[in-house]
Length: 298
Image 1: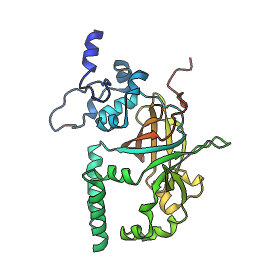
Image 2: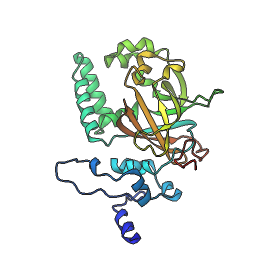
Image 3: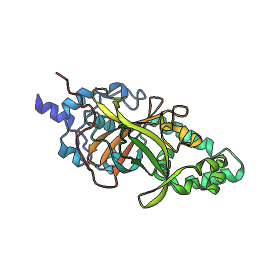
Image 4: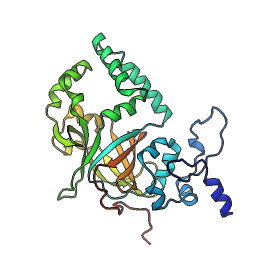
């Protein structure tokens, strides 16, 4: 029986990392194209396809980019929180959800059709030059969300994170051409810090803590919560507020793949939006999980 189970789960291994996944049952054509109604539950995935530290050490950012959404989900089920990130992490977005891709394609189309003629031409040319065939969210993420800086824990135990945004995209001329001239004044109040050898804006502050995962409640994840970013200063309501409780109510959760590499999931109002990867720009640091790992108290 064990041989049969092993044969079933070791299917279509990804060349860059030989990680096992639990296969999905076949579905009728045109019905549930992404097979979410047929997926195995989290405990079954972990029982049938356990991962060792050696397995996880093989995984790279390119590995994660090659995975389908179901594979990313199954990998996430088998991860623990890892330690709280400290310092700087580069960010890469992984947009796999076909519904989200369709919605953001429509939003990009609407954005490039609004405003006066000069603004429309500027947006269309900018997207064409920067994106080179990438979907809109991945393109924006590659250029706009450069990375995340996790600050040292304060005396009262508070942990803060800010996103590093290239200063170039918030120059007054760029904002005006994009039809966002009203942000020229507010952005001048933003904190500027050196990130990855460049002077970047540090925006969208968030609290960092352990909390329940929205996809797998069997163990905790590290939560990046933008709801009370106004606890930190400077806070720019016109910009930082876009991700807060009065804006899109953004909430991220992450788990460690291996030291220095985290797999994350972003939610808007508790609705899953996309995956992302955090990769440390420095040493990996501690490896022990900071959050509850799901073990019984008994």
